[in-house]
Image 1 (cartoon, rainbow, N blue to C red):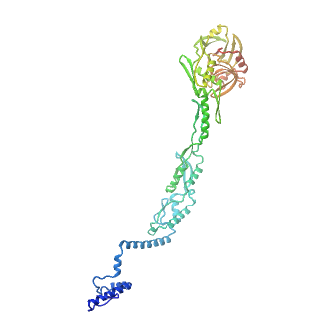
Image 2 (spheres, rainbow, N blue to C red):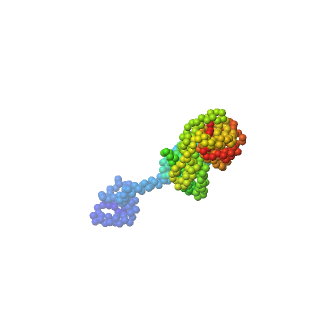
Image 3 (tube, one colour):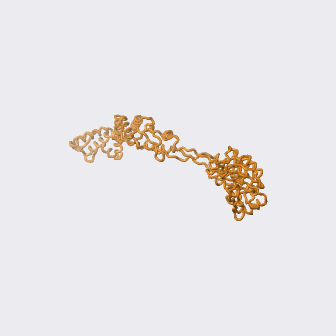
Length: 531
């Protein structure tokens, strides 16, 4: 069947040449009026059952369709669908802007399809926002409580929920039309810095200790620089981070507890450290040496820094320390050292003498050698500056018997029970006086035995662990035990004071006038009998 101008015609008995001419005319007409051909093709398609098409011929629109790639047609279709869905989502969002999308939760509480008011009620009930979080110490003991509502930025749950609802719709998720536009949200809590401030205000001074500065101390090993000690403070950053996790994690309940740990806080003592170190260097330069004393017969004793430090008065200064030597203090150190090591060199025996109507056992000094304490003191002082060794010197003395037999029967006699003292010089009683001896209540009794006067001194400073005073007259006879005045007493000599805590630290205390007489008439090595 032939085609002219896009219209169907009945077959005829034309020649083949006529047919060719008609086809050329058809092609020319089709190129000029392609749109008419398309319309005719559509019209022809609706009449395919009535018309008989020429074999091998097809409409041009079909040819163009076959020439378009399949993937392009798919993309075009998807774009069209996306536009349709976006329009639908926008329309759905506009219709439901007063409600949260499906699959939405706030702090773990589902608020899907809820209004702001409904969501506020649900969140408040589930999270118990009317409750408080308990702050505890590291042991779990309660310190303070923080109201949950106070930790919201706005202080109002409804305002926070309304902000989240608006934020969700402003995001405009295209999947909202399918009910998939939800998400997980958290209420607007204070930031960590603000939470730290709240915790600090709530716990107050908990966990706060001040760092201690370094200091110079005169201890068992002599002068030393004691290092600074760190202080402590509450670890507010850790506590705030934990609290924030509790708030955002949906774990709020009536039992919510947050521990506030403590941390070590060093002090800034660099300036003090440098100053004290210079003072320590100055002290070490002055008293950092030791002196070894050879008493003989294998007895060697070393005076270390700790003992020598007692013989110095150290006054720290801005750039070092002023160190003053105290000869009396060193003499006391040596006396104690000699007594504790029994280095006086005298062999002890017993002799019964009868004095004042009662037999008394005395320690009798046999003939032998006694330590020259004055010479030892002088030599130790000389050796302190550079450190070194000192040989002790002993002087020969006679026994008590020979002391009396020679006619030089001078001695001091002390009766502890009667609390009385007698002083004889060359057999004549110079003076006698009531006394106060060492306290029995404080376990500092005056020792009994036979001794001798070590030396005599005016205006001596006496010191111990719990006392320090200066006396006008000092007559030691056994280490740091001696006879001295006690101007602070008010006439309670000779009574039972020694039985009480008001007794002495071991010395024999006498009135000022008596002490002066003993000082003026006694000499070194005069025997002192105490019983």
